[in-house]
Image (cartoon, one colour):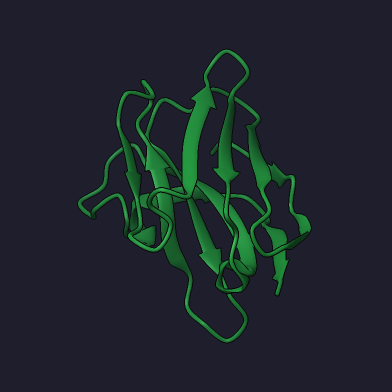
Length: 124
């Protein structure tokens, strides 16, 4: 299993921006994604990107505000978050899809490797 480490979280005012990074210990040849979990809520899908980077997918709640990218040469994925809102406050996790999965890319059961999470706090 590949090891994933997130970074880039922090405290930002509403309307601000943050960029999260997810560094993998090795090559991830599958779809990778970001999920988030707010205090007292279930983990939810945020965005995903195919291995080639040509296909991206977003939750409705972040469409138009967040973008996802990856640099396979650096084994790193990014989440650029703009126009942040207080409701974006959560722990953000990156994940790598399992080699074989029968679940959709927005279903966390599709993912076999997870990072430890990074806190994003948006103040109003």
